Picture 1 (cartoon, one colour):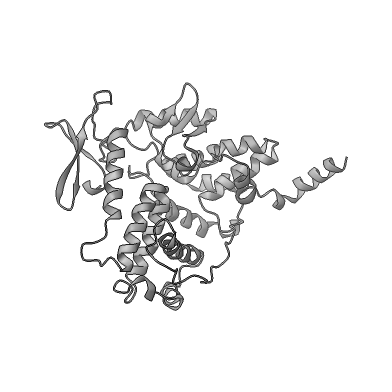
Picture 2 (cartoon, rainbow, N blue to C red):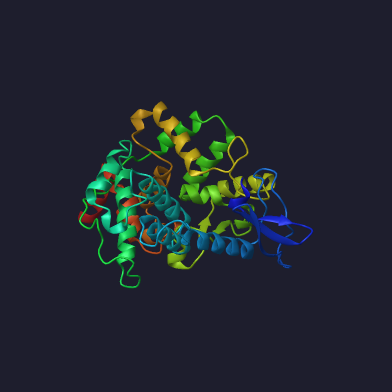
Length: 358
């Protein structure tokens, strides 16, 4: 992995550095109370302590917030740079990466880069979207990213713009993915998977109800096997709740975690068959292959396992408050709106209706 993406340790200086624009930037000395610096054989990354990672994140956030030296202050590039810098500091990493992808794509379209923000039109945005016909569900996300940047700029706290030039643009309604993987279907997918690395990843999705990114990011340091939990300090809702994400492990997951921790003491526990950490694209590719093999299962994704976990738990009588806690939500609203698909389990719901009617 490139040095610009992760801190590295220089033993002679007992300090951590990162390379930015060809220059080595010193982040700070190695904390005396932190574990000794080591470089993972699997990932090639150093085990930077939390304090160094925090300094690294602040540095990269500052760089994102600074517009290009050649970008005029009244340009779209300047505005988007400021918006991405704010996103980096205040939103989850996945949110930042999504917004960065779509905004960079929009800037590269036609003459957008050289236009001032007030010259951007709804027609121009729609032409950009039409130039990407493969963006089906993503079309909504792309519009919301650009619209959100302009809304952020017109906020009275900033006043970078007086009006949003694309206010009123049509935003497609959200489409709910309804694919539910039954326990039998999940067993078929597991049996069809030959490599143990992906089997372990599927097991973690099934047994924990975690988001795919949480499984991909968990490390040996996050695991407390005496208590039977993972404790994730960095997670999707961490900024909102201010609390770590606690994942409660089944006996099967305790055993799997113990085995993987013995193999991967540094870096992510779950690695692919090449010994590399799972990333969003790698996960998406594996599920695309499975969908081609089993088209009758519908449009399932890695997130389908999380939906199945919630739906199965509710069907088995687990209280909705406990289910929300198990999957890392502070309220039951998200669980009932986005994950529970009990209404599609006709037999179960008819049985519930009988109970309700006495």
